[in-house]
Length: 192
Figure (cartoon, rainbow, N blue to C red):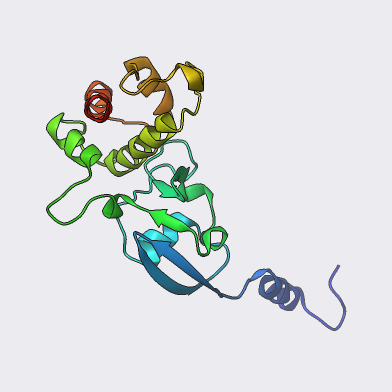
């Protein structure tokens, strides 16, 4: 019930003001470079990358953590950038698809995707590549999956089923899965 001295619209305006969080300073370390920002605490890492910093390699697909198009690496671990706030990663090392290779020298996984035709429309490819790079590190660290125990993984022994299981958080609407698996498997075999 509105206070007699204050109209309902004034009360709503006051409530909206209370819900607004002022921009906060943070430092994001992205692809080896520090970016000092001042952003609202509710900005997702995905929006900070794309809208604030112009790093558009990371894609916004579902914006609900279901498709994996926004996959980036934070301290070497893959995450969905749409599900986390930028403020949560102050000072942490973030790697996007732009930071995997160098000019004229793509990351081996990026090259494998090109060599094996691991994409069609390409929209999911940045997330797929980042996830595949993390997959290789997980296997090296002998991290178990639903299919194999950590001690069962030997260099070069990663099966196509294991790759599919570990990449299950990244969707491809075009259905390029056979070539994505082939690309990842080719890198696994080269590293064995």
